[in-house]
Amino acid sequence: MKNGKLALCVILLFVAAAMAGVGIFYYEKTFASVWIGVGAAFFVASATLPLLMPLWRRLTKSVSMWLSVLCQYVLVGPLVFMLVFGLNYWCSNPSTTDFQKATVSGKFQKAHNKTRRSGRRMIATGEKWYSYYFLITLPDGRTKYVEVPVSEYARKRTGSHIEVEIRRGLFGMDVIRNCRL
Image 1 (tube, rainbow, N blue to C red):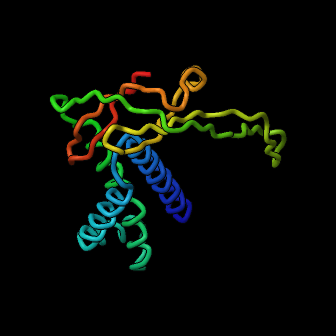
Image 2: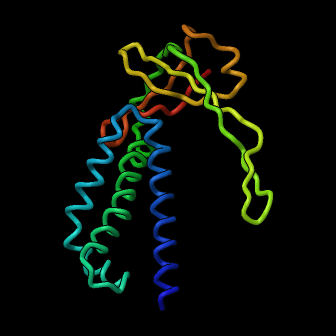
């Protein structure tokens, strides 16, 4: 029975990490502070804690209140974070579409290392690979980092203009739907 409890915890942690990753993906396409999603997640997790406490006690088979509270915040928090930014993006209103000329204010690249397994316990770092980003500034002063392909990174200079499709999201936060480089 102890292995089943451990497997459930691992699966739930994997699901929570996946939900947080999806939430961060949609946050990067939104003109809003990350604290809006974090605050909403904390509020909803706190508000639903009394309702879901029996469920967490039954799932974890523990009488510990702290384990139930931890499960609540680790699982409900990323779920709400994902829903806030995901629903804002996917339910954006097409009638509010606005094409704006954004200025490339900066360019930078991030270096990442490929890793490979070279033995039972050995993980060797391999060659580097890069991801490329523009810092775009809209005419109203808002800025956002946008990942771009290497061909566009090499072609565009600081001060160049790109066309950005912006829509009003479900919760009133503007989202970038498309960048025409």
